[in-house]
Length: 197
Image (cartoon, rainbow, N blue to C red; front, side):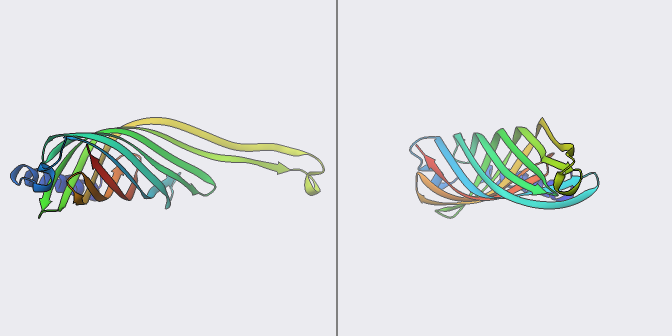
């Protein structure tokens, strides 16, 4: 866990203290404790392939649903597809299903801050298309064959995030959020909407 990860957890702890201490006027007006959420944005993969490092961006989307235990504390289940990034002709993908605690703290009547901390099961893949190595001019003597690879695994890991929301109505909130997978080393910035019902 690096310094930025530690900082995120410290901020989450601070949000928890604030959420416990300050009631949320907008959230308290929710008709029901249930909600659904959706978001889209851009992901960034931190890449280390046999010592070759870099980063590549993809398109991310998130869907989820939750239940508010109180105006400031909710339990959430969700799914995030961090999209596909290509680095040195290798396609990287990460998709996670997670459960998390979401803590929120109001900033006036409509604005709020929130933090998310949970655990996810992430399906990860790295693959390269087949490359044909020809023999002779234009492959006139055939080829040495085709070479490529495809690796898949599943990893249980921490997921966390920070964000802000603006309540347009008691049941409709616009959100902006940063989310990160701790082990896979991919994060995302997203904008979305949350519906209470």
